Image 1 (cartoon, rainbow, N blue to C red):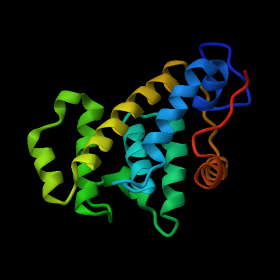
Image 2: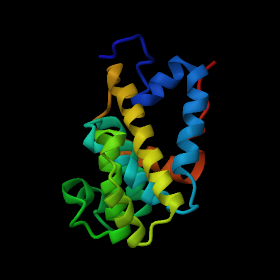
Image 3: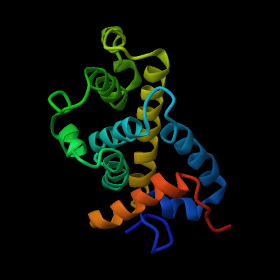
Length: 181
């Protein structure tokens, strides 16, 4: 049960955004900017970083919805589950492994990112833009996860629901949906 009075039919961050449209607008814009670009990182890679950080933070709603969106971009694999189980042995590029290592450090605290991690990412081909966006996605998802869980939002336990929503996010709405005024 949520810690504040939220719309009962909107799970996770969606209920919070309906509750507070004033803050929903910039939060949606941030998610859109971080996750819906193919500049540098691809959309699927961006969603994988968001999923991984949400998993590390044990935020069920965020790891479920962003995991479903990531899986949408990787339809013929079990990449999301493999990354959550052991990202260093998952069938992803060395560059993505290095970026997820950076994201993991950000999740622990910004000062945990070591120069060696940045060097390793660059040695695997990561650009400054990709490193920047990885850190920003990881930091933002720590905030989003704490927002969702800190107010006790509910998260359905239906993979089909997340898959349907993921398809709509990827193909239609992105993260710019309207909330009641």
